[in-house]
Length: 77
Image (cartoon, rainbow, N blue to C red; front, side, top):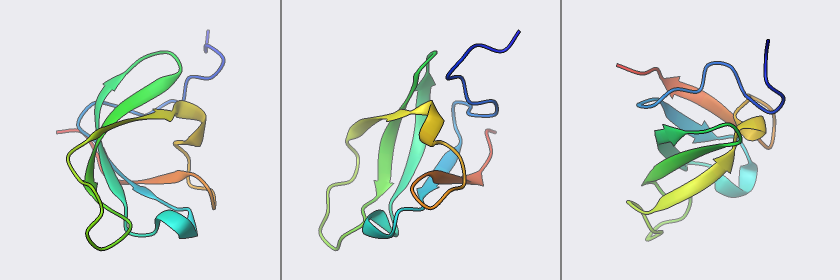
């Protein structure tokens, strides 16, 4: 049975890109996944000189290819 809030397909090692026009160019790598969140490391920042390498938490419900979600760039190894 599928648990509410769990986005199928989000796996450790995947690289996702932010679809939000405010975060254009931002990519993250998934380091850990729990029932509600993907814990990620920011690989590229949305703005020049932006922070990279820090950890962030993203709700799994946002890990889908909508205008304010994320799209999968590279699957898990």
